[in-house]
Amino acid sequence: MRGPVFYSLLYALACLLVLILMTGQQANANSNENCGCHAIKSEGPFVHKPVLDGACLSCHKPTGEKHPRVKKGAFTLTDNGMVGLCNECHERKNVMKYVHGPVASGDCLACHDVHQSDNKTQLKAPGAQLCYKCHTKAKFDRKYPHPPIAEGKCTGCHDPHQSNVKYLLKGDGMNLCILCHNPDMFQGKSVHKPITEGNCSACHSTHGTQYIHLLKNNYTDEIYMPYDKENFAICFDCHNNDLADDLRTDKETNFRNGMINIHYIHINKTAKGRACKVCHDPHAAAQARLISERIPGFGKWRIPILFTKTDTGGTCVVGCHKPKSYDRINPVVNP
Ligand code: HEC
Ligand code: HEC
Ligand code: HEC
Ligand code: HEC
Ligand code: HEC
Ligand code: HEC
Ligand code: HEC
Ligand code: HEC
Ligand code: HEC
Image (cartoon, rainbow, N blue to C red; front, top):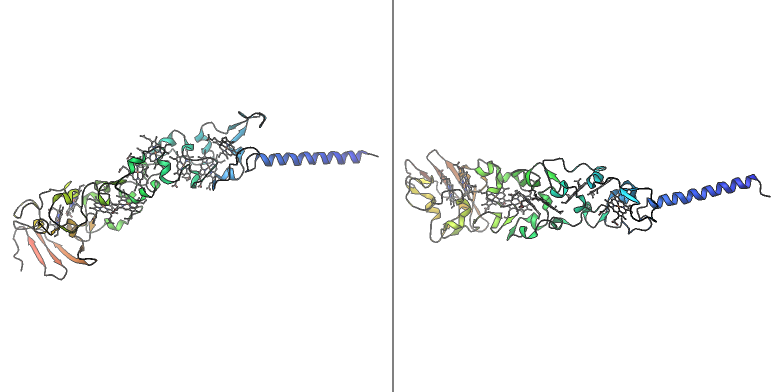
């Protein structure tokens, strides 16, 4: 006997089966696996969140064509313009004054893999390798590269998308540099004029140079050597290169006792001429005229130096030596 109850039960069972199948199908379409057929999109060490969540359909919109029977045209991206697609969930990356070329042209996928990647932030290549896809690596090969360049950390200084500072920089002038360098180095009683102007690149080439300390010209690390202007070429790019030329002068320098040029006395020697850095800090110093508080001495011992400036000269006390004074107008007879 098969009464109406039996048929209702059978009907209910069939419905349940269909429902189970349908939800199964649904789950499959939304699975973070591969929609059943595709290469798995979520096995990379870094998977884009919506892909990981299996929200394939938040970007791939079914067109109504029967997929997978129809292979091409069964899905469209929810926005034709790639940037539009990304902007559905992300803040816009092209609103600042300077926008990176590929970002401006909407090519987010030049750098990012939209599904998964071996690199953090879905990048198609790690560190500087990403940048070198479009920027010639050879341009960054320097004898002395800036350490972050050597380590491939271009984004330590550049924003990959946009910036209000030219060259996509993360800060302007010295504000960029003090993201990593101690600003105390650039403060003191006397601060070198180019530094007050925030112009580090007056002396340094940020990516790297052929000279030590990223300098744009020569500046020796030695402390004593026969006098040769070439050794301090960076200073003479801006300053009179005759400041130590003559023992007697009334104009080459203010470091004079009457007519006697004290720069000459210290620097212009055939054997043990002193380097500028024996007295001057190229950035800033706690004493007038960029005179350092301690001068490089022998080994690790740095000798204290006390410099007092007057209107027409000055006095130096070096280590435990007696004070020595100079005066341009009324020459001092030192003991
Ligand atoms: C955040 C948006 C987004 C999500 C989420 C997403 N996709 Fe994609 N998918 C894209 C874009 C954009 C392309 C075009 C890629 C290209 O041109 O390189 C694409 C391309 C594809 C392609 C064709 C090219 C290829 O890489 O094989 C397949 C297949 C695909 N996606 C499957 C999936 C599956 C399966 C999921 C879910 C697990 C998924 N996608 C999730 C944005 C997305
Ligand atoms: C459906 C929404 C959605 C769309 C569309 C989308 N994303 Fe995302 N994306 C997310 C979510 C959610 C996260 C995770 C955010 C988080 O963790 O803060 C994310 C994270 C990211 C990250 C950072 C990953 C990380 O490790 O920090 C990148 C890069 C990214 N998306 C790029 C893109 C690009 C490029 C597109 C366009 C091709 C795009 N996204 C489209 C939702 C989306
Ligand atoms: C020139 C390569 C490049 C292009 C083009 C690019 N990105 Fe990025 N993106 C990066 C790099 C590199 C990072 C990692 C930044 C970091 O670690 O400081 C990143 C990080 C991100 C992040 C996570 C951190 C953040 O800034 O929110 C998102 C989201 C993102 N990109 C989205 C996009 C979108 C959307 C586009 C297209 C409009 C795009 N990117 C185009 C290189 C690029
Ligand atoms: C997909 C190609 C591509 C990739 C990858 C790429 N760039 Fe670019 N970059 C460009 C283009 C195109 C320009 C614009 C060139 C121009 O206007 O002369 C540009 C310009 C720049 C500029 C100069 C902007 C200006 O105002 O002159 C900087 C800085 C820059 N990129 C840094 C980077 C860094 C850092 C990376 C790696 C995170 C990177 N780029 C990756 C294509 C790329
Ligand atoms: C320590 C900070 C810093 C790092 C790290 C850095 N840059 Fe730069 N970059 C700058 C500055 C500052 C400028 C502006 C021009 C100048 O002063 O040389 C610049 C300019 C640029 C320019 C445009 C001008 C030109 O020379 O073509 C590109 C492109 C560029 N950088 C790419 C890169 C790439 C690629 C990397 C990683 C290999 C990188 N930068 C790492 C600071 C940096
Ligand atoms: C992303 C971090 C970062 C930024 C930003 C940065 N630097 Fe550096 N810089 C370093 C690191 C790391 C070193 C190596 C360690 C050290 O000397 O402090 C270094 C070293 C230097 C050196 C010494 C090189 C040598 O061989 O003696 C100079 C000069 C220099 N940086 C100048 C600059 C200037 C100028 C700027 C700004 C245009 C700047 N840096 C911005 C990270 C940075
Ligand atoms: C007038 C030229 C000049 C200017 C301007 C200048 N520097 Fe230097 N910098 C030098 C010289 C010369 C050295 C080598 C120091 C030495 O041999 O004692 C140096 C060394 C350095 C060093 C590495 C050695 C150390 O003392 O740790 C860093 C870092 C540095 N400069 C950063 C900067 C930054 C950042 C700026 C801008 C705020 C800047 N410099 C501006 C000339 C300059
Ligand atoms: C980019 C140009 C530039 C370079 C390179 C440069 N200077 Fe200067 N320097 C200046 C300017 C500008 C002044 C201020 C002159 C003035 O006020 O008349 C100055 C002033 C000085 C003063 C006097 C400071 C004071 O407080 O009165 C000393 C000392 C000095 N520089 C030493 C050096 C040494 C040592 C070097 C090499 C390591 C050097 N300079 C490299 C531009 C430069
Ligand atoms: C023995 C210490 C000492 C050495 C070494 C030294 N200077 Fe000086 N320099 C001074 C003193 C002190 C003054 C301040 C003179 C004054 O204004 O009374 C000065 C002043 C200057 C000035 C300001 C203009 C002037 O000539 O009065 C410049 C520029 C300068 N030095 C550059 C250099 C350069 C470049 C070198 C290396 C080639 C160097 N100094 C080496 C002690 C030294």
